[in-house]
Amino acid sequence: MTVPAAGSAQAPAAAIATAPVRGPVRWALGLFAFAVVALFAAFTVASIPDAWFPAAGVRTIAPRDLALTRGTGALDRAALVVAAADGTGMALVTANTDFRSADYPVVAWEGSHFADNADVRFLWRTDVAPGKLNTIAVPVVAGRLLPVTMAGNPDWIGRVTGIALVVRGPLARPVRIEGVSAKPGGLVGQAADRLRDWFGFEGWSGTSINTVSGRVDVQELPLSVLLIAAFALAAVTWLALARRRGWMAMLPAALAALFVAAWAVLDAGWTWQLARQVAATRAQFGGKDWHGRMVAAEDGPLFQFVERARAKMPAPPARVFVVADAAYFRGRAAYHLYPHNVLFDPFADTLPPATALRSGDYLLVFHRRGVQFNPEEKKLRFEGGDPVPAEAVLVEPGAALFRVLG
Image (tube, rainbow, N blue to C red; front, top):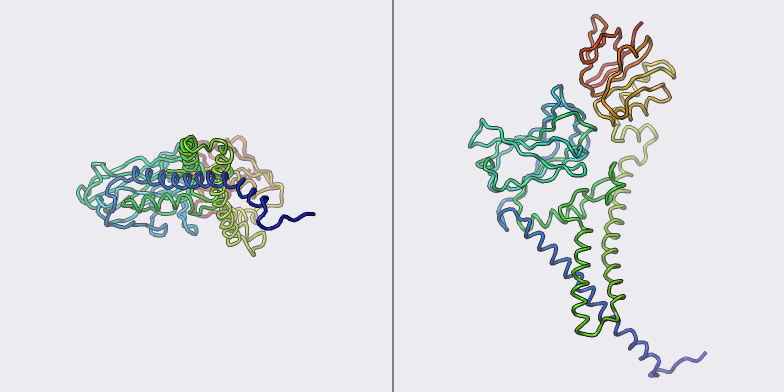
C-alpha cells in the first residue's frame, strides 16, 4: 500500500471536497437556531396579557391549602383527588385568597383527568362586591384545564378574597387538582411557562400513548410545532441565500441537517423525560411486593376497600353487582373482585333492576349516588325504585357492600 507523502495533492483534495459542504450546512444550522429563538420570542411577546415587566410574583396555592367543600375526595400525594360529585351533581374546590386583581391577569388551575366536555367554571369574590359570586368557564383540552386570562374582565377588580373551581355533572373518573396559580403574565413569566410546558415533568397517564409522554400534555406552544415552523423558516431563508451564493447543489445536505437538528432536540427531550419517569416509577413501586404495588397505584383506595369486602364474602364464585358513578371505578372494582362472578355496566352508570337480584347476591357500591339503605327495615332502594331486602356487610365513607336477603 502506498502512503501519500506529506504535502501531496491527495490530502488537500479531500479538504477541498468537504469545504463546500461544511459552509452551507453550518449556515443552515445557524439559521435554524436563529429561527427557533425568533419564533419563541415572537410568540411570547404576543401572549403577554398585560405589562411586560410586572412587579408582582406568581402566587401559588398548594393542594393541601384547597378545600373540597362539595363532593367526595381526598389528598393524594401532590394532588387533591376528587372522586365523585355530591348528591346535586356538583364538586366544589375552594381557597381563601387576598391579592390585587390588577396584578394577576392570568389564573391557572393545574388539573387533569377531566372529560373534554366537562362543565368546569372558575368562581371568585372581590372586596368591591363581596356579595356577588363571579364566574367564567375554564376550557378543558385533552383532559387538562387551560389557564384563564382575566385581563379585561369587568368583574376582575379590587382585591380577590376567595376563589373556587366547580365541576358540574357526574365525574367519568376521578380528577386530580395539583393546585392553582395567579400569574402576572409578564415577559419572563410567559417564557418560563413555555419552558415548563416543554421540560416540566408529568408522569405517564392513560393518555400517554397519544401524546408526548412525560411533558405537559396541553401546551400553548407545542415544541414540535415550534420546531416545524423553525425548520420551514430556516429552509426558506437558506434557499434565498443559496441562490445568491451558488449553493443549490447543497440543498439535500442542508435539508438533511435541518431535519436531524429538529429531530435531535425532540429526541433528547423525550430521552430525558423517560429517565425521569423511570425514577418516578421506581420511587412509587420500587422495593414493594405485589400487595404494596397495588396499594401504591392510582386506584389504591378502591383496591383496599375491595380487599376488605372480599374478606367478608364467601369463597368464589359469588355473584357480585358493582355500581359506581365513574366507569373507571366500575371496571377496576370488577378487576379486583375476580374470580367472583362480577356483573357491571362498562358503558353507562346504571343500577341493576330489583328483579335481577336474588338471595345471596352482593352489591358493591363505590362513590355512587342514589343508593339508599334502611338498616332498621333492612331494605335497599335504588333511586326511588322498589325496595330489596338486604343487609349491610361493610359500610365505609363513600363505599359499601350489601348482601341481598331472601
